[in-house]
Length: 398
Image (cartoon, rainbow, N blue to C red; front, side, top):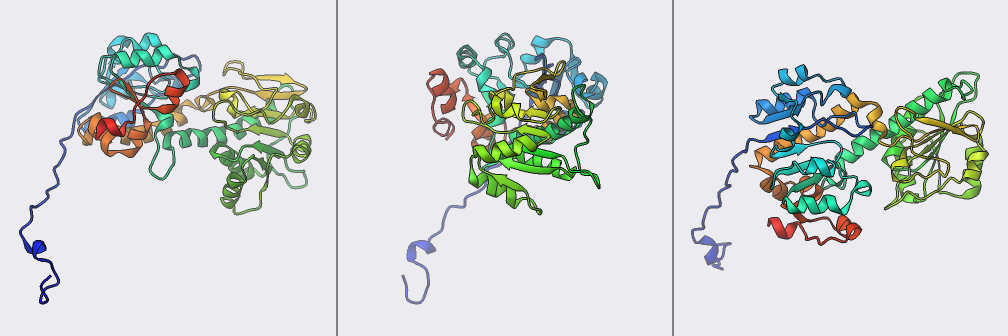
């Protein structure tokens, strides 16, 4: 270093200028087939989101009547710029296939080699043959539930959990007053009448929004969870006092004996742990209501069992049980709007980055949600579950 200069000699030499190389945008062709699962009523994109994508130069192909259950007609999508076709196979042959439910093996047979699949995964309902088929076709697949932001949030999963938590209280309110086995109670707090008591098992996103909705209606709420950290986090989000407790048999029994509504909102790594035994359910009041939101992963209440939207309830021990999985599908338009608001920007991002390869490389959320990249499994959970070989996606794209 020269005493008369604060710089070293090599720092004063001319340096190469580093220019930002712009990535050319890529026009996407997106196919949206009709959902054929018996209880699936949602659609991945609304007409407004389709309109935004078309204005950005992308093409959207939608199967006839794909949005009818959510209140969106073929005319709505046609006016938004989408192409409508009755040919299911043609839609599945699109370069990018966008669904809410994962495709069946028969539907996956129609996927073109090297195409992109974006949908929920629902690993517990999948088979090894499904992933082997995707590998054979060299598919790049992204799962809603695995898309994770850098702050640790799961945007799509969190939105659906918010809807499920809110819905659980709305459904409980309807059953508490209108079901043939109910006692005609109003879920809330009326002057001179004791407030309705709600017990929530689970302090995650579903539990929080269930508690928020119940408190908003004036109910007295108690939340139980095995994790003191989750309880502390939930409690800090409320301005008012809310009763929280770890799962202790005596405290849980006392709360369940007094409650009018019991919400199961607990999740486990594989199967949801059973927290409320049949013996505890027998202590519940006549005409009280159980809504087990965690039923899709086994349920946390022993007396719960799977039901359908067509026949959603059953009565056991004089307690009304609601055990419909995929609870957000009960409100298909709201759920579709919520999903579309998240998926549309992701699709825009893919186009702006020049395609799926560049987008996965530069977008952490999409990269975390990718469980298969060009036929190579990149998710360790799936690998362990189905005894398949997986590789780190970061070693494939960088």
